[in-house]
Image (tube, rainbow, N blue to C red):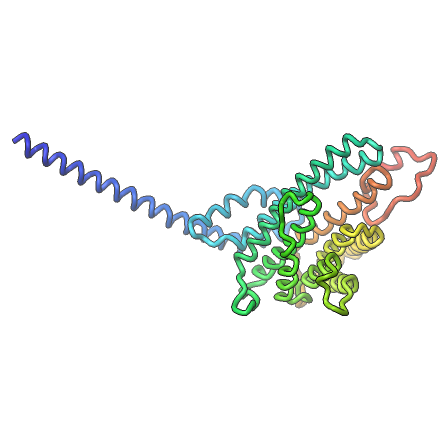
Length: 357
């Protein structure tokens, strides 16, 4: 009887092994489906609630921290088959803003050291700037690629199909990130290896949006690239005149994102007068809005505040530009309450209390 019992035991072990194997396989398969379902849920939640909420907030520090913290988590669900690229445009663009914030602080140190002729500190800070700009460029380029993954050109290069305003905005931010990636990469000394060939692609993509609806920003992007790369400019086009037009289109809505592009182009060409002009203009508009309690209107006439973050980011970029100019001229960044104004020659009796008042 011993042999049949052993044979039965062996058969039972094989059977149990097979049951365990298929149970584990089923469980893992179930987890995979569950993960994908979770990713699809997160994508829907992000589109309907998280992204609109974040866009309505004006705290840029909170926004960039959120982008840095959640980007890897959200995009990891792509491994399960969930579509997350359109959300990745926002998270990566915000994470890039964090790197830009860190870069400007190092740039202030660099410029202040030059002002005081401390070349060792200046050199060290300049290296830090290049590293951080390289990080920003990588994230900006990733945001641009995410937009191209989420919204694919159709046959004969037909524009992508957009199902909502959020889709259009995601595409627009992807294009903007592409322009920023090129500029940041140049500032980093080419550390991110961003291909310059994306400039014509950004110009082409900008024509897929109604530039009047989106505060003139699509027009500003292509005009800005035409100003920075004259070889791409169509015959008879005046890039700076188009940038002025784009800025004017943003006035009714109170969204000055085109002004940030104008300033970026001015800085890239070391055109301090144009940089000062756009900083002063936006600062004065903000002051007038606060004084008169102007209510912003969304294109179409409805009141809105859902794009407060874009305006706050624009203001931060312009304030950074103001800080650069102030430090170069005076050794200190823009004094509190002086955004939109610029320095005068220091008087002999000026003291630190005057600067802090």
